[in-house]
Amino acid sequence: MDPFRHRMESERRRDIAIRRGTGARAVSTGLALAGAAAGSLALAWAVARRRSVAASQWRPGAGRMLRAGPLGVRLFGQGDRVIVLMPGLASTQTFWGAAYDRLGDGATVVVVDPLGFGSSMRDRPHDTVLTAAEHVEALSAALRELGLDGRPTSVVGHSMGASIALLWAAQSPDATRVVAFDTPLYRTAAEAEERVRHLGWFESLMSKGPVAEAVCAWMCAHREAGAVLSTLINPKLPTPVARATIRHTWPGYIGSFTNIVRGHGWEEAIDTLADRGVPIDLIDGASDAVPVPGRARELDVAHPNVRARTRPGAHRLPLTDPTWCAEAIASASA
Image (tube, rainbow, N blue to C red):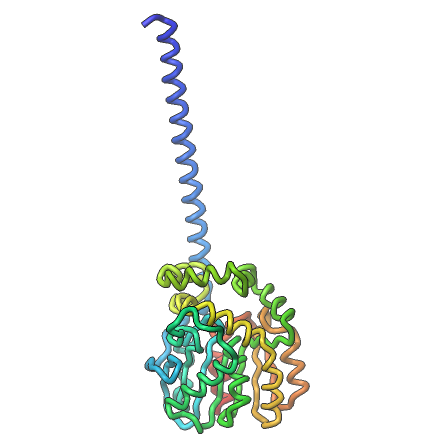
């Protein structure tokens, strides 16, 4: 080979070697950065998990799961008095863990999967949206099926479940007490939108619209993957509680959000309960973004049967402060 061609070939090989080395270093750097990011996320998840009172203290609640009318329920305890425990939107009976087992010492306790959620999901994923009346009638039907209607009943709820508790108690002569944690007492749709925005970007995104519907549809089609994703997104929740948040369909979710969380029926319900003298405990986390500031206190002043209290903490008080909440329910239901 002549000297010129030899030099050109040598330079070509050198350039190829340089490019290969540069590419390999780029790939190596990219992998290192991706690994570091994944490690940071895993560390942040683990730290949040370790600091979570709910995740560290929660244990499965007592009782046996069974079907009662249209609802899946967990039943335990004994006594003529009935205590109903209702979880919030996109939650199931797992929300009420072992800290609430003590309520069964003097009452029959019914822990409910609300209509459209958990074991109370409807069979048809594209069914019509759920209404407030359907939620109320479903609870009444479940209690009739269990043979518990006609007994003095304390109905307890968290968030959306608290709203259902108020609506059910207003139409049931059996209701003797309402204990409502972190209740969304909104008078207008604008109030509801504002409070949802205070919860964060993800909650706001999932409250309405095509993106929320698409995410919900994907969850319906990939339940196991969705449960894993929910656990990763919610490190502060106990794993069974986080996994259960995807057990619903879009019609059930958006119907419940629109007609219960954003609904206005609670005002008439409170007036009805005031006329009957049924005590209502409104208990909010001091830093909870869901309730309208001052709304519970306003109702306390306006109605002698309403008692408003705050407790250190944010939303999900029954998860983060279960011992105190269980005692509040037991004292109110005695």
